Length: 44
Image 1 (cartoon, rainbow, N blue to C red):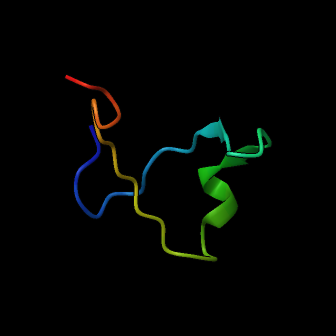
Image 2 (spheres, one colour):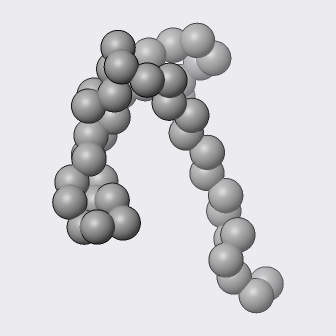
């Protein structure tokens, strides 16, 4: 669990162009917001 204001652990995922992008790529460069929307694109 990560608390508010705590540094998030690094991770790597494929972007829309299928190239890998890591959270650490943005450290010190840009602000990053992580937002998770469970079941956003489902009919349920």
